[in-house]
Every structure is written in structure tokens, then in C-alpha cells.
Amino acid sequence: MCGIVGYVGTDQSVEVLLGGLRRLEYRGYDSAGIAVIDPLGRLGTRKRAGKLQVLIDDLEANPLANGATGIGHTRWATHGGPNDENAHPHLGDEGRLALIHNGIIENFAELKAELLLRHPATVFTSETDSEVAALLVGLEYQKTHDLSLALRTVVGRLNGAFTLLVLHKDQPGVVVGARRNSPLVIGLGDGENFLGSDVAAFIEHTHRAMEIGQDQVVTITPDSVTVTDFAGRPVETREFQVEWDASASEKGGWSSFMAKEISEEPVAVANTLIGRIVDGAVHLPELDTLGAGVLEGLDRIVLIGCGTAAYSAMLGKYAIEKWAKIPVDVELSHEFRYRDPVVSERTLVVSISQSGETMDTLMAVKYARELGARTLSICNTQGSTIPRESDAVVYTHAGPEVAVASTKAFVAQVAAIYLFALRVAEVRGTLAASEIASLLGELGAVPDQLAWVLEQQDSIKQLAGWMTDTRSVIFLGRHAGYPIALEGALKLKEVAYIHSEGFAAGELKHGPIALIEPGQPVFVIVPSPRAKDSLHKKVVSNIQEIRARGARILAIAEEGDVAVLPYADTVIRIPLASTLFEPLLAVVPLHIFAMELASAKGLDVDQPRNLAKSVTVE
Ligand code: F6R
Image (spheres, rainbow, N blue to C red):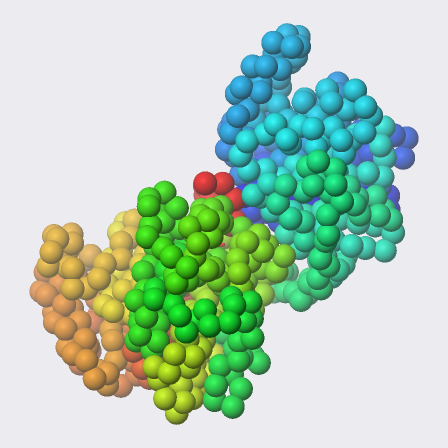
């Protein structure tokens, strides 16, 4: 939540900052602002409520003097509504210092009261916690004229989560940043350096990046980068090469990022598998950092995540229990964190997160480590915090996901967790090598099958176009279809603002069937009739039960399944796949449906109301 960019280099700060904010806008889009020091040493700021374009239009109509040093911010409101006053930057030292902030300063009320006691004439121009930090850093700066020291002194007094960037008009060519539990990465250029909430902020300019640890402060000038802890002691840093290229985070010719990212679902899975299936076995050397014998000695796995990531965790449970025969619990990260979970050194806590920054998940990972568990992160974002806080990381290679609603990351997460499940089965000898090779063969076939499903986009678009007046949609699935029902419902709520619920089909008769009235649309994920269980028959019975009560059935069923035809109003076909692979295919029509329905209603599918991509507050 909130995108942050900092720049020192050439006299083109305004362009660099706006380019960075454009790529970070998915993190928050309530308001945006920049601050720039011009060559005459003047500090100019501009901030506007609304999407970034409002700020850009304002700057075009009334340009700000350009300069070589600047900071920029795109906001997801926490303290104070989304208006011009609460937009960042905020000023300190009587307008000579500008500060931007991502996160929440939990003790801001106490700090504000103290500030007013010491300086009763202080005028606050916003309702934000961030302005208090700007004023405090300004007061500290007045004492020493050392911007890094001023920021370090203040962050030592803050509780909560924050990334702060500051600049001062008397220090051209310098931006100082600090972070605690909130993201910040450094971009290393030639005669210019960058700071950003994630690498998207500077990917147009450099692929060289550096991580910043917890409770660290960074000072950038055009030719230097200095990182210290909050006490000012130098710390070791790690440089890394950003694998994404700038075009990957561009919309290209697509109508939306969501459309582009759904089209990338096949390649997201393919790239996640590349190099990880070798001679019919799983190759995941990344797991070695868990420690020798850890996988063999596990007695329990806990999978944690939020939203869509939690649904991929549910599929992970089915796969791990079936293939590796270890008990698995799935929990929402925020629920895990705030109860008293029983874990031991023989528990592996696997977090799943696209952004690697979700605060609920980060806190749960830290908590799991405190309790003595080993931790593995399945993550899509290099340089992000959750992998750094985990014992091992398996990256998904879905490429940058910009649309707020997660799509391609979901299928990549499922592919990664299936690889992990098969590796654990290998290590523990719960599956024969031939069975593992055969399952890996099925996994390897998924990208082509996904491409086949995508070819049905037009008919799903037509269906969505007919349903723009729909006020409620139900999604049903059993077993591995259940998380897909939940995912279908979440996507529809999120981007089309339509009330939708996902249920386990077996649960219908225990209550939800009361919702069925004539015309109620119900998506049903139909299991394969070829599976050796009786799930298919059971789901067809469920369809009949709700059809008899007037439901309009939209079935997602495998090619050749004729049993659903008499009862379904619409059938969307997916290729033949076994029980655990079918969900990867069945989810795509639901992603397309949500996007097309939202588009047909004229909504912005990339930036749905009230949401932000990376949820960096608890
Ligand atoms: C839904 C969605 C969210 C995220 C959730 C976790 O479309 O995007 O539910 O899945 O906020 O985010 P990450 O995976 O970044 O931890």
C-alpha cells in the first residue's frame, strides 16, 4: 500500500518520479504527489487527490521547476481521507524539508501531543500520521543539519510499520530513506540512484538493485549509496540483478493489465517450472537452506496466505497430503498470527505471497520463527521482505503482476506448491519415482492446456456481457474445485462489485441452498467423470438439486462430459486433467468472467475501488 519513489541524478527528476509512480500506482491510487529540489536550491511540491493522472494533468498545466533530486508518492489512505491536504509529501523545517511515508505510525497521537506541548505554535495542515514524522525530522535537522542523523533519531521513536523518504532543500543531491516492516529497495544507476517500494519504481532505468534490511537507513547521492542501522553503524548489503524487464510491467496493447496478466497465465506456469523438472524428478536446490534433514523430519506443514494466495494454499494442502502424506493446515495469515498456534521445530510454515510484502503474512512468518518453526516462502517478487525473513524461498516466475486482482500469480503459486509437494514426496519416499515423473508430466502439460482454455475468451465475454445486471452469483466446487469456487467469487466481488459467494457443493443442503431462487446464476466447477472417486456424480446431483429450484447453471466441465448437458444452461469446457490439475484450468474462465463483466459495466478492472495491490498494513 502506497508507492514510494526517490531519485538523485540528472535534472529530470519530475519525469523519473512520474514514471516510477505510474509503475507503482497499483499500490494505492487515492492521491499522488512529488517534491523536487530545483537547480536554484528551491523545494517545489505538488500533490493532488485522485489517480496519478490528476497530478500529471496538473503538472502539465502548471509545471514544477525540474531538478536532480526528488521524491514521489502514490497513496492508499489510512489516517485521513483521500484529499489534497492528506496527500504526500508532507513538509517540515518550515517548508524546507519534504517527507513521504508508507505504513502506519501507531504512536503518532502521543508524538503529536508531545510536539504540541514543546512547540504550541505548530500548525498541522493534514490529518495524517506522516506529517508528524515530517515535523519531527525537521526539528531534528535544525539541531545538526545532518539529514540521515535527523531521520535516524526520529525513526528510533516510531512504533508501527513505515518506509520514510526525506529530502531537504539545503541538501541537494541527497535522499535519505528508512524502513521497518514496510518495503524499500535501492536501484543502482550510473551517476544516478533510486529508491522504490519495489523494483518497478526504477526498472526503466536500471536492473541493478540492492536490498535494505529491517530497521536500516539508506542515503543516496548520484554517486554513492550508504546503508546503516538505526544507530548509524554500517551494515552489509546484498546486490541483485532484477530479472523482470521494463516491458513486462507495461500494458502493451492490452485493454487492461488484468487482461494482459490473464493471457500470461500459461507462461507464468511455464516459467515457474523451467529448470525445476530434471529427468522426471524435481530440482529445487532452493530448499537446501531449510537445513539438512528438515523435510525428512517434518511432522506437520502449515500453509499461510491471504486472499487468492490462501486459495492456492488450500490446493497445496490437497497435494501435499495426497502425495507426501504429511498433515497440512491452511490458515489465513492474520488468523494464524493472533491465536496460539501449536508449532514446533518439526513444523514447516510455508507462506504464499505474490508481493512478498503482505503485512499480515510477514508478521505471521516472523511469529512462526519466534515459535521455533522452519519457514519457507513461495513468492513472486525479488527483493521483497517475506523471502528475506524466511529460511528458504521458492520464487514463482509469473513476472510483475500489476492489476490489483491476482490472476497469473495464482496459477504460478499452485505450480510452485505442487513442485514442492512432489519434492517432499520424493524425499520421504511416499511416491515411487515413476509416479512422480508421471505427475510432473501432467504439471508440464498445464501451460498448453491453459492456452487452450484462453481460446474460449470470446464466449465467456459474451456470457459476461449478458449478465451486467446480475446482483448475486454463487460459485460451487467440491474438493479441489472448492478453492476455485472461492477464487471465482473473490474475483467477481473485487473487480465487478457483485455480491458473490463460493461454497463447497456438499455444504449446500446445510444452509446456502436457501439462497437459490428462480434465475439465480450458479457457477459449478464439475470434477472429472474419469476420476476414481464419486465426486462427479455427487456434483451432478447437486446441480440437479439447485436446478430444480430455478438456478441458472453455468458449468465448467471437462471436454466430453455429457452428464452435465441436460442440466446446464451454459457449459464452459476445459481440457481433460486429473483431479488436482483440473483447478488450474477451471480458474481461468472465472478470471476472464470477472474481468469481462467488470469491463462491461464500465469499471476500471486494474484499480478497483477501496483496494490496493500490496497490503502493507495489518
Ligand atoms: C485477490 C488479491 C488478494 C491477494 C492478497 C495477498 O485478487 O489479489 O486477495 O491475493 O492480498 O497478496 P499477496 O499474494 O501479495 O500476499
